[in-house]
Every structure is written in structure tokens, then in C-alpha cells.
Amino acid sequence: MKLIESYILRRTFQMFLATLLPILAIIWTIQVLGRINLVTDTGQSMGSFATLASFILPTIIPVVMPFALVIGITQTLNAMNNDSELAVIDAAGSPRTVLYKPVLLLATLTALFSFVITNFVEPAARVKAREMVAEAYADLLSSVIEEKTFRSIETNLYVQISERHSGRILMGLFLVDYRDPNFEMIYYAREGSIDEAGTTLTMRNGEVHRKTPDGRVSVIKFLSYAFDLSSMAESTGRAPVYAGDRNLDFLLKPDPTDKYYMDSPGSFHAELHRRFSDWIYPISYALIALVIVGGARSHRRARLHPMVLALVIAFGMRWLGFSLTNLAKNTNSNMWTIYAPPAIPAMIAIFLLASQRRMTLPAAWQNAIGSVYGRLQGRITAMRSKTGGA
Image (cartoon, rainbow, N blue to C red; front, side, top):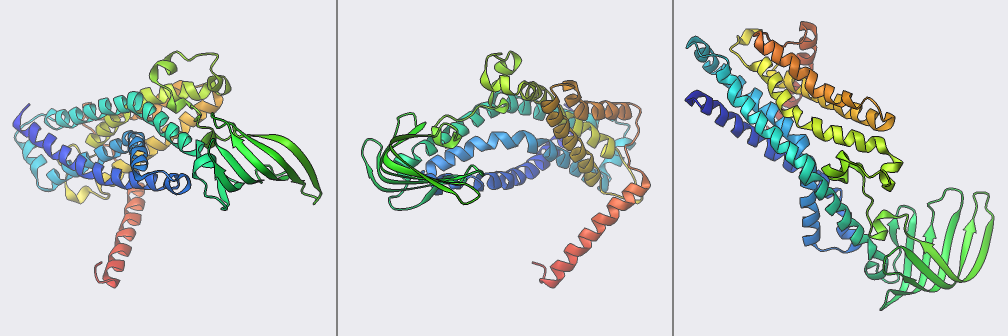
């Protein structure tokens, strides 16, 4: 690799990391805080919470990396253009491959890393995270809930116990079930117990009050009553396995007798094609960024910052990809359209690069986006001036 190529690769990689790490940290923090109830509701230790947080990270890396790559490429090449470095490279007679080679090398490495994470690391991490949450809630009734305190174990499902004995024995059990909109159920039992699998709560010597929407109440006494917990994924200790949790071998050759596959075969087929198409996005984004900013240009011609234009196209491609994937899940057809959002723009970008053309939005669009961008900058500047630059 030539010295100038190493220089461009190093600067692009540094900007890529400087963009990736803060964005990844912010999104990861948001995702982790959304699961803080695992500690508050089930009494898990911070070590368990940290382990769960580590399992969340592989699910967001493949989504964030392509956008960080776009920002890294456009910012690096735009800075080189502002410093007249790209003009000097063109004046020296260097071919455009001097710019293309390091950028596409970084994009290829990013795509390969994304492929490995998406197909091999992320499914296993999803399964481990679901298993941790399921196991935590499996012991919620028998060992975590405080005595003489009402706690919610699921939406519209509350429980209170008077005493907890060894062997998963619960004394003085109240159970309030509002999950069915057609009637309200209130259970009381002198004694209850949970089986080892956590799928059934057996109540003894009690009664159940059933109230319908019209206000009628019926009371039934029982010697023994089994309350089914198997419908609650978080309470059974057996987390459901969705298409995104399956390994690549299963998606390539699904088991036709699998319960979840029989319920929604389209979601499994769409998941397979999503995994095979997601790795194309980094390369496609890199090609688009090169078309937009991969050459010397005059500052007077710039109506819109190249990074803004590249991100607008990138977000549009990603949104279209998500939409087509969801459509394929529901219709169980047109699976090949999932490849269109990353592949078609990449082929257009290759044609433009080969013919040495530039990708630009119409002047009216650039002026409109530039006007909105300028207004936002103006408002931010005005707010800073009011707050003393804070």
C-alpha cells in the first residue's frame, strides 16, 4: 500500500472509531436502561445486570457501524478537500484509486466484521439474554417477592403472599388477574406451591372471585386449583425462540416440525435474507460516500454539507431495508427485494465512479435541506448565546 493510501486509511479509521464509540455508547446505555427493571423487579445482582448488558451489545453493533463508516469517510475526505489535499493529489496525476482503495478496504473489513457478528455472535447473545431474563423471573414468586407486599409479575397480574416456606411453599396467597378484558379474577388461597419447572402455581383451600364488565360477581370455592404460568415467557424460565434467535444452520435448513417455524415461516425466511444482505450496507455506504465527496471540488459549489447528503441517503436506504424485510415476513414472498436497498445504490455508485460522475441532489432539494440545516444551526447558536455558551 502506498504512503498516501496508508495516510487516508489511518485518518478514515480514526474518524470512524471516533464516531462509532460515542454513538455506540449512547445507544447501548439507552438499551441497557430499558432493562433496569430486571434488577428492581427480580432482585438480581449488578453482576447479572452487567452480563445481560454485554449480551445486548452485539445486537446494536451491526446497525451502528455502517453509519459511523459514512461519517468517517465523508468527514475525512471533506477535511482533505478543505485543506486542498485532494486538489494536490489530482494535480500530481494520481489515479482516483488512491482514494478508493483505502476507503473500500476499510468498508470491506467492516462488512466482514458485521457479517460475523450478525450471523454467529448476535443470535447466541440474543438467546443468552432471553434465558437470563426468563430464569430471573422463574424464581420471582418462590424466592424474590417480599412477604405482605403486592408485586406485579406481569402486566395486569399482581400477587401478594403472607409467608414463604421452604420447598416453594407460599402461605396466604392473593392473586389478582386483570389480563382478560372480559372479566376480572381475584384468587385467595391459604396455601400455594410452584412446581420445579415454574409452569404451574397450585393453590389449595381457597376461592376465586370472578367479575364481569356488567358488575356481576361469582364466587367459587376450591380445595385445589392450578393456575397456569406457561403463557408467561418471563415467568416460566423457558424463553421463546424467535427467528432472530436462531443460528445460521437452522435458517438455512429449518425444521418443518418446529413450533415457531410452523407459526411464521415467512419470518424465518426473511431473517435469513436479512442476515445475508446486512453486510452489504457498509460497502454500499462507502461507495455512495466516494461518489459524493471522493474528489476535489470548489467550496462555492457546496450548497449542502457532504456528510448530511450521505446520511440522508444512508438513512433512506436503511429505512427501506427494514420496511421490505417486514413486508417479506408478513407476505412470505418477494424475499429478494430485501437485497435491493443496499445492492441497487451500490451498483449505481459503481457506475458513477467508473464514469467519474458526481451524485448530487437537485438544486431545489439541496436548498431546502440546506435551509432547514441552517435554521437548526441558527437556533442552536441563539440558544448557546442565551445560556452563556453552555
